[in-house]
Image 1 (cartoon, helix red, strand yellow):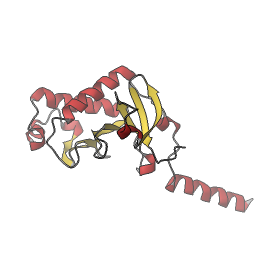
Image 2 (spheres, helix red, strand yellow; image 1 turned 180 degrees about the vertical axis):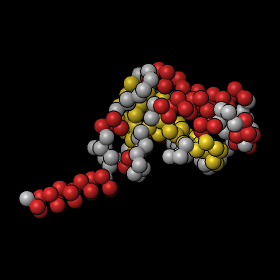
Image 3 (spheres, one colour; image 1 turned 30 degrees about the vertical axis):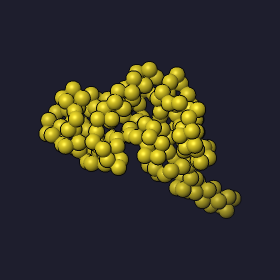
Image 4 (cartoon, one colour; image 1 turned 90 degrees about the vertical axis):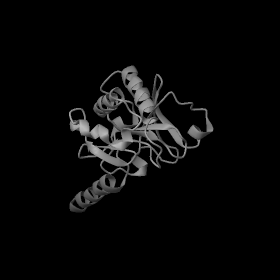
Length: 181
């Protein structure tokens, strides 16, 4: 009996420390708001990301402490972004007007409520990906992305992504070479 408890403990440690996170919500589209509202917000944020200056990484990200990053550059706390006008003075907003800035911040906050904390252009495929339900472990095997209005028959999609779930024009995908559990 004692060895069974030890064996069970070791197995649980192995599953939680080095394996794929087994949260069933991660492999299904499960949003707080309606699919169409989230999809429209994703489309809008994509248009704003296209306005960011050219960089090796083009996109936005919110870290665990609530800081907004654009093109890998730390901008400031997201919670202060609408009230701190100095954040808009950052050179990353060179192609933004006041409305663009306000929309980027408000959509980012909205997407966070829907379990999306990063949006950007994949350097390999050129497709937009939106990180969904990021895990604490944050390994390649645990990556999940939301994509909207993507051509799943294209080679650049098919060579890199597998579809886990689909709702209307929204897909939940994982890297093609990851065994999804």
